[in-house]
Image (cartoon, rainbow, N blue to C red; front, side, top):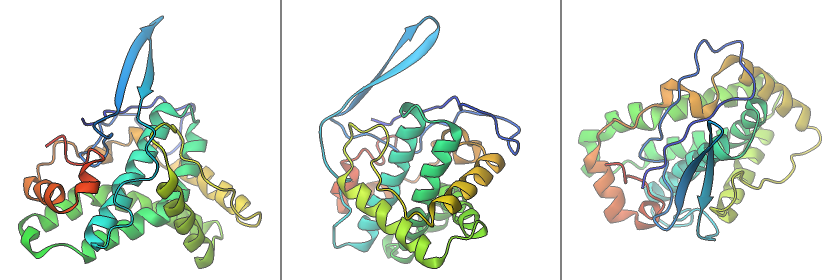
Length: 240
C-alpha cells in the first residue's frame, strides 16, 4: 500500500514561493501489515496510524550492495515522510531531521548508482535521474548547508553513521525516528544549517520537485521484488 502524505508547515519559508503537496513516490511505503486512517474533526483532517511493532528497516544488513543501499534510501524517505506528516514538527524541526538524514541519503543514492544491475540498463538513467535523483540532489544541498555552517568531514560522517544506526532500530510505531543527541560542538552548526535550509527550501513533504509517483519503472520494481524481498516488504514499488 503506497502511503500518500502531505504536511501543513508551521511557518513559511522566505525561499519558497508555493506550498504544493506532494504524494509519495513508490519508494515511500508502509509495510503491508500497517494501515493509515484519517478522520474529519471540525474540518481538520486528523491522521492516525496502526502499525505492527517491527524493529529496524528491513534489508539494511543484506549482503547485496544494491539491495542494502536501496533499503537505506527507502527507509530514509519513509522516516522523513512519516515525520513530516504525522510527527507534529515545525518546518524548522523537520529541517533539522532532514539535515541529519542527508549525509546517509547521499551515500545511499551513490551506492545505488554504483551497484546498478546490468540487467536494468534500460531503466538506469530514468530511475537514477528522475526517481532517486530528486531526493539525492535535495540531500546534497542539505549536506552543502551543513558544510557552509562549518560542519567538518568528521561531522558529516558521524551524522551518516548515527542515521544508519537509527534506521536499524526504528519501529513503524514511531512518528519521528529516535536519534541520539549530536556532539555539543556540532549542535550550533546543525541549527544554523537547518535554519538556512528551512529558509531556502520548501519542506520535504511539500516540495513539488519530489513528486515522482507517476514515474513508471516496472523493470526496476520487478527486480526489487525478486532480488530484494526485504526491501519490497517495506512497501517499495507497491504503487506500480
